[in-house]
Amino acid sequence: MKIKSLRYIMRLMENMGNQDLINKINALLGKSASREEIYKELLAVGFSVKDIEDGLKVIKSQDSKKNSHNRIVGIIALIGAIFMGAGIFSFIAANWQGMDKPVKIGIILFSMIAFYAAGWFIKEKKEHNKLGNALIFLGAITYGAGIFLVGQMFNISENWPDAFVLWMAGVLAVGFATRSYSLYYLAIAVGFATVFLHPFCDFGIIGGGGGDCFSTSSFFLLFFAVIITFLAGWFLRFGMSEDENSELNPSVWKEDSISQMFFLLSLFLTGAALLALNREFLGDAVSWLTVLLSVSIFGILVSYYFRMAVTLAFSLIGVVVWWTTTATEWASDADIKMIGVFAIFFFISALFYVLGRAHFGNHFRKLSLVYMVFGNLFVTILLFVSSTNFGLEIIDEAIEGKSIAGSWQLLLSIVILLTLAIGTMFYNLGKKTMSYLEFLTVFILMTIMMVLVFVVPYSKIYELSELDYSWGLALAIILNSALFGEIFGMIFTGYVRKEKWLINFGIIFLFAFIFVKYFDWAFRFLDKSIFFIGAGVILFITVWFMGKGRKKMLSTMGEEGVVKVEAFVASVNSNNAPIDTEKINNFSSDKEFKI
Image (cartoon, rainbow, N blue to C red):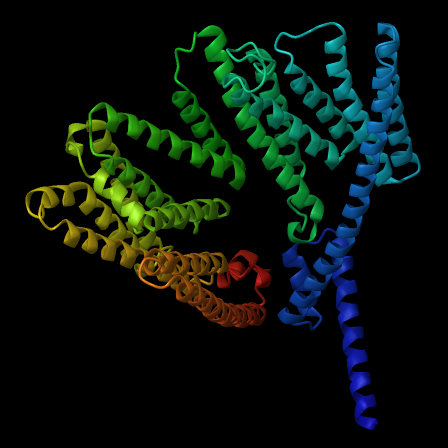
């Protein structure tokens, strides 16, 4: 009994100490203290780095639960508002034909003003934010419905989904006036509806096609939409306080994500506006590929200025689509073998990865993950497809044709991409942002692609013309070995550099490799019952080993991160030097242990 009582007292004292730490952290957060100030203050009164980390995790967990509750309440209120609006609109629709136009317009205006006024009163005076925001949201829907109903009443059909732009502009104005996130989301959804209805129009899926359907918005209105969405993203971006603890402040997460979506919407609308300008004033003199490249370059510049990963991702996809599509046209026009197009796609992917490593050591570190994810993803998918029977047949056809030297555009593109990739790799080695293993892996993969482009076609045609089977087998072994080595290199690099995302990426691809290769190789040789039983056994074994290995690697990484942070802070305290949080972050890339 005495031992149990002692344990109870010790546990009670520990909880009291934790609560005291949490209260101190909350008090510092209430004073808008920075992370450096929080650590400095708490370390000075005897708390360890581990205690502070645990306290921050508890606060984040409490905030997460609170935010989940608020989110559920908000969603329920919005659903109620939508049902309420649907009932009102259903009643109006049933009696719509018997009403005069002034009565119809009066009902629309009265409903919109009533919802806005009631929402504002409940939110500002009664302080029921969720219910007030729901009524304001209903007013915004009424405003949009009113635009379309007025168009229907007065038979306004020319370029009519310009109504989407007008609706988005009104919702944005009310959203900024009320600081309602639900209205921001509605404005983004309406804005993307404006953009993505264009392809449906062009293919005649809606409207009559040929530029007469309602989604062919005018250039001037689309340009207006570009301006307001860009300004919306700008104001939200610069409205976020740099002193706030973004990891502990959900409103900062929201504003950051919403601002990125507005910038992305602005980028898409810029493309739509340029297409409209080309259609209305230039007679389609400029190709859509030129518009795509222009918008993508603009998006990259904006991404770097504001450091926005989402916009950069879509801009890079635009560049890849432009370059590969243009390269395909170059190869087709000159009857060049298509392996050159594959090579361009591969070298772009390799360049993305090494550029990601180059960004890792500077103030554009936030963008590095976009480059590295795309580089890994594109290269691995290309190797996956190429290493299958289907992919080998494609390669065999792709190396037939005239020499790549017959197209100076393709040759110059490959030279430029190779030069940039190799130069960036050596730069990374000098800055120590890339390991020798990564350098060697990328170099070997690029060498294999160069052999396929410049060497294999000639040796195959003139020396191995009677050894097609041996040629195919050798290529299959090389490509599968390259894929297997790349995946294991990914996992090993992630472990060495303490990058969880790279480990997870590699494990997913390793699972896919085992699964796909089993189906690719064993299906034609084994009895079907044995084949499927074997597949199940392999999957169970793979999942067990992968899960066990992943947990061991990540736990080791976490322990090393805590030890390094504590050692660094101890050395700082011994010298009475200010805490440099950026240096502490560099000790461990594990987000759970970042200060």
